[in-house]
Structure formats: structure tokens, C-alpha cells
Image (cartoon, rainbow, N blue to C red; front, side, top):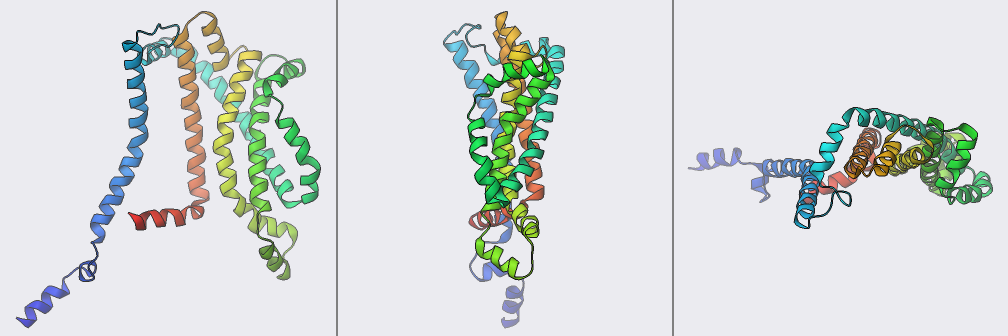
Length: 290
């Protein structure tokens, strides 16, 4: 009898021996939670469109006021060739302007965050320029560059540059003075401190600003295309509105939102691959709670 009890205890799960639940159910619950989190956005989007369709049909809202999602999808499919052509133009101008904003915003953020002299000298001017509505700048861009792609690129750059610069500068400037003193005592130079500590410290801020700036870049491109372009989603929506083809205008909005979500997911993927260490503690705490 004693030997049988010993054999039974030897095959016992350690978690059961100390009165804790087994790791397998915990792992299954974690996987199920991840599956729910991946499916939940699609459920929310489908629910929004379903409620939208029901509300339009229930209240008999006219199509030129608020079209139903089915009418929007039908208009997008009918004009799919023109929609794809104009969407590619908007995506191209937005990506080019946003890329310039990332480059100059990152360089400017490093300079502003590492030098108080540059920060105190140039930051008030940048704040004043950023407070100017970019719609008011578009006519000046038309005078300089003419109607076409360039004003949309410049507008996308101007509207998305400032958030990137501010966040990168904040990440570098918030490095603890004690840490800087220790690194200087060890012989590190100013640029080495910025390179080894400041830049890694600012990366979570940088990618957070990318998620915000990419939506601003699309806003800038669309606004510029409605004012100073003969091609693009903004121009397509303007022409559709002038013809009272409201479903086509809403289809342009839908395509723009899809492109924005796609760019947002690209920035989020890059953030996870680059700065996974910044959220590792949060993920561990969530796993322990689960």
C-alpha cells in the first residue's frame, strides 16, 4: 500500500501538489483570450455596418443624406477601376509625405531632445507654425508648385511632422540626469549617451507618434486633393459630391479608412518587432492575471 501511494504521488502534477491550477487550462484560457481579441475588431466593424443598415432602412433615410452600407459597397464596386486608380494616387502621396515627416521628425527630435539651446530657440516658432491651419497653406503651395501631387505631399508632410518631432524629443529629453552623470563618469560622450540611451528610450514614443501621424497624413492628402489636385480620393469625393452621388463619396471615405488602418497595422507590426521590450512587463502581468 505504501509503495502504491508513492507511485501515485510521483506522477502527480506539481501544481496540483501545491494546490494550484494546472498550467494547461491556464494556457488554453490565454489562447482563447488571444483568439477573442483577434476576432473582436471584426465583430465590432460588422455590428456597426449592420446597425447602420438597419437604422437607414427603419427610419427611411434618403440616400443623398445618409446612404446604407449596401449602397456604398455597390457604388464602390461599380466605380472600382476609378476608385483603385485614385486610391493609389492618395496612398502614394501620403506615403511619400509621411516618409519625409518620419525622416525629418526623427532628426529634429534628436536635435531638440539632446540640446536645450536648440529647443529653446526653435520650439516656439514650430509651435506657432503648427497652429496655422494647413488648409490656409494649400493656396500658397498651389502658387509655388501648381496643382497636382506636390501640394498633397507637402501638406501630408506638414501635418504629420510635428507629432513625430515632439514625441522623439520628449523621449530623449526625459533620460534621467543621474543616468547621464553615471555615463559621463564612465567616459561616455554626449552623442554616445544619445545613441545608446536616448534613442532606445525614445522608440516607444516614436512609434506611438507614428500611429497618430499616419492618420494626420491621410487627412492632409485628402484635404489637399479636394483643393489643389485633379486626381486622388479627395478629388473623387469632391466630384461625387458635386454630382450628388453620395454613396460614391462615402465609398471614398471607406477606402481611405481601409488604407489608414493598413498603415496603422504596419506601424504596429514594426513597433512589436522593434520595441517588444517596452511592453514585455505589461504582457507578463497580463499573463499572471490570466
